[in-house]
Image (cartoon, rainbow, N blue to C red; front, side, top):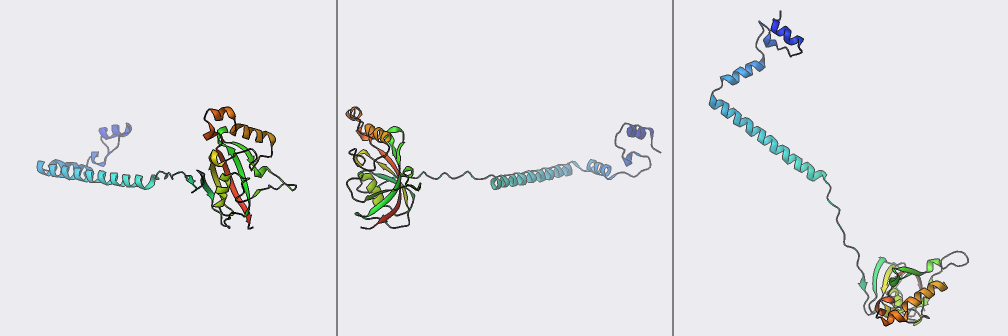
Length: 233
């Protein structure tokens, strides 16, 4: 039967070990404790050193695995590609272009009749859009492109320089300096809307601002041009 001490421990909820019962054989845990007590001091030091080495190796392995897991699962930061840059067209008087889409059709020659769509903006008015051929509609509601002969003096030279090195189907953003833009109010393309036309030309040819030396910036134009088709002459 259990002793009074063992019964009190069971009632209190303490664990009841077999070794605490009279007449029972010693437990393996008790045997280990007695074995440790019987070890000589030198043996105990060697055992403790071996245990420390095992723990050290275990921690080193865990750290290595952890660093590998982090390097494997943490995504690399996205690479930052350089923004596209404009290039200046040779012998264009400073016209700069950025190809948004390279055309796959024919390239025009001087004297060819070309048809283009465009958005025209004025840099001096924070990029105000003064005209767009996509807003020019025919009777069926389709957009009407701007048609001109390449090499004509009636069209501003900056547009001609840009179109000359394009291919049909291409789209190009063009920055035109004042010297290659509007030199008079009769040069094309001319906005069909009277108020847009008046605002455009009164800004570019403003006598007061020209007298103040702003002529180098007033007439800077930005065109997005699409070469729709061409016809050889």
